[in-house]
Length: 337
Image (tube, rainbow, N blue to C red; front, top):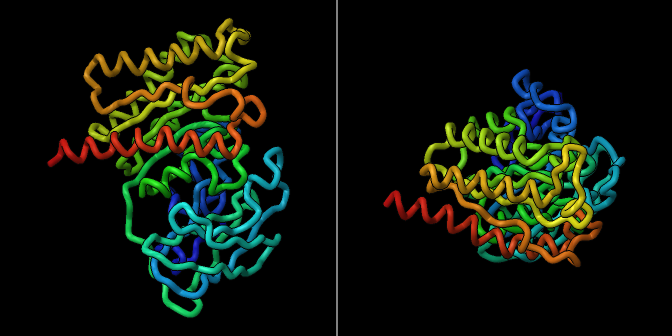
């Protein structure tokens, strides 16, 4: 088991569970409870998607000691993350490539009031061994509202240019949210074990955005999909009776909109089932559940491969969904005052 050095822990963000059998930054419960999840979900959960360092201070540079496990990046290639990138706000200040095995990088820290956010080479399965300021001091950044983002490969960031370009990463930077990315490429199908994990984790905001894998990898018909989503949302709501939840129905997908799967459902059918399930819960009194309709969010030309957004597509999703998420969070804050 790859432990996390205690001196690094205060700088880490996006980690919901302790180190375990899935590595230092697991994205599902690494213990026996998580073994109820499908194997493909657990495999994706071993990648530290969304895990990052957040710090305050204006040193000349930030130096990071690390160890990476692999350079086999699979289908995503370099966009899965092969280097470190330091951001302040929306601006990338510096970048450095990662090496296989043990290494050290030095990133110019830049200046300004924004926290410094360091994105990791996710695809190489890194472990941060040490982080220190050079020519100045650093401190862990203050806590921000915690956002649990459940979804599939689109929320995991596929075909963005790098980890920092995924729409959830962009929203986290732009709206001051502590993103915990629980998106599983090719896997997330609304499994109830995942709903139970979300229900058990502390959260200030939750989003749910899946569906395309229910059209093809594990085919659902509309009734099965609607019932599954209703149960998923009910379980999450049990654990978070007052937390805002934003449900994003499936984005458009050219090859699936009018093509029935083996159970006779098109993606358009599943989208309607998703949206109706959300409407039914709202009619039943769940006022803190909000629907964001996926179809109009992105035009067809912004999909790099017909399924996943390109970098500009991820930017557009962040621009559309970020304000929705922020308003949902702020609305609860106003109600509490």
